[in-house]
Image (cartoon, rainbow over all chains, first blue to last red; front, side, top):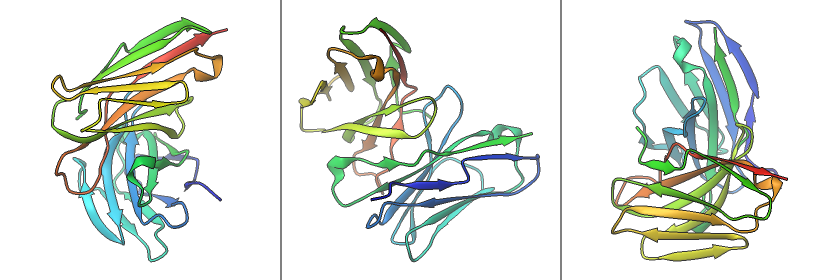
Length: 113
Length: 113
C-alpha cells in the first residue's frame, strides 16, 4: 500500500513566481494537512482539509492557498514567492483511527532564489 | 508560533545508552504525539498519548505526560545508531477545530556506534 506521495521532491523558483505542490494521501484517508518546515525548526501548520472542505488555516498570508479534490488528493499553491518561502513543505494524511497519528510524505524542498 | 519547547535541543549518546528528551507546551491538549525525522525528510509517527493517560510504551519507547506541568518526556532505551534523528513533540489542542498538530522545535539525537 503506497504511503503519502508528494511531488515534486525538489523545486527551484525565482522570487515573484508561483508554485503548485501536490499530495496524494494514503488510500482511504480523507483528511489532508499541509505544513511548512524551515531549516532547523519544527513544522508549522498551513492548512487542513477534510472531505474537500477547509477545516483549519494557520497563520500564513493569503498568498498561500490550497484545495482538495474528489479523490482526496490536494494541491498547495503559493503566489508571489518570497525568499522566506524557501522550506520543506510536508503533506500529511490521517485515517479514522486517531491513535495512528498522521502519516507524512517525504516533502517537497522549495528553494526560492 | 511553536506550541512549546523541547529540551535538550541536541543530545549525543553512545549506542546502548538511554536517550531522554522533554517537551513543554502551553495550552490544554487533547493528545500529544511524538514524531521522528531523518535527514530533513518526512516525519514518522512514533506514539500518541491522550490527555487522560500518564504513561505509554511502544517497543523501546516510553512516553510520559504530566498535564499539570504541561510537559511530556520521551525515553528511548538501549539506543541504536539507527535512532539518530530529530525528534519532535506535537500537540492537538483541546476543543480545537480540526486536528492540527502544533510542533515543538525538536531534539537532535546523535547515537554514536
